[in-house]
Image (cartoon, rainbow, N blue to C red):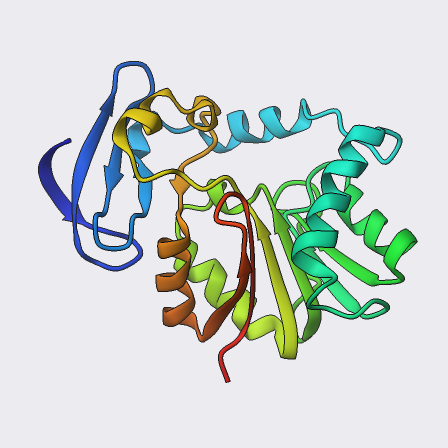
Length: 219
């Protein structure tokens, strides 16, 4: 790591640079452990959309369905009752997670995706469940979106997130497969999530400290 640069987007502390020889600079905060990719080495909007369009995942893909079912059974169902109203935020070109929740767990699901379902159907609503899988690593301003999630939750609602946590180790980060996806620009640990939760009125109710984390309102 080298030199101090500006401030962390999450906690406003000083940050340092992690230099990757291929993927460019990343900015690391030792206070909350948030890592952000330098804006000069990111996809533009057109490139990002094209990458998502190349994701060929469907409800017919048993491995992909099992991938989501594991997440649901570990990070959702122990904390959120079946048969409620949910929002899948960042549903992608094929809203498989929402379909599983409707077909297997009797949820009524809304979907939103910046590129593929851009109508903000969540405006004026509150949800028993909000899911966001493989999304928060693409967000430039995590606090804004977590604040939005907090405002959209009912009093006993659950927010369930899937994203790969980094190990807070520079050598591991530099060789980590997760950063090879150029559209991944924000990286977290459980400590990062604790800080975000404290800023937006949430509390962590579960994490496996690897890729799943669930929240409720802290009141």
